[in-house]
Length: 72
Ligand SMILES: [Zn+2]
Picture 1 (tube, protein in one colour):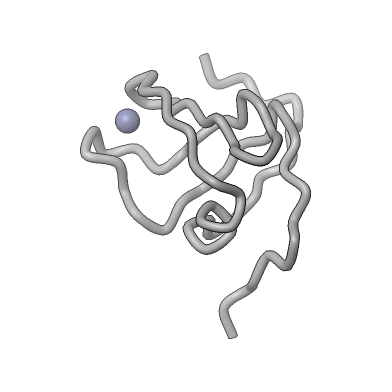
Picture 2 (cartoon, protein in one colour):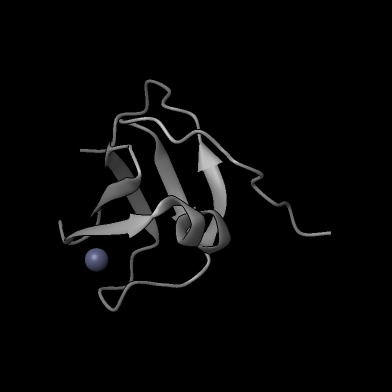
């Protein structure tokens, strides 16, 4: 069963892996701002977008906790 994010509370700084690949080839997005709409930044190309939480919940494959990874 694919995981479903039921009213998942996105937080700024979290890293999300989306199901759909960005045209740049990346799938990692960082939450810049969380509210009624979520602001995301592509970690591969730096593209910025906003998406409603409802849509984002369906688009997210995995949520990576904001650990102390050193990724540039
Ligand atoms: Zn990108």
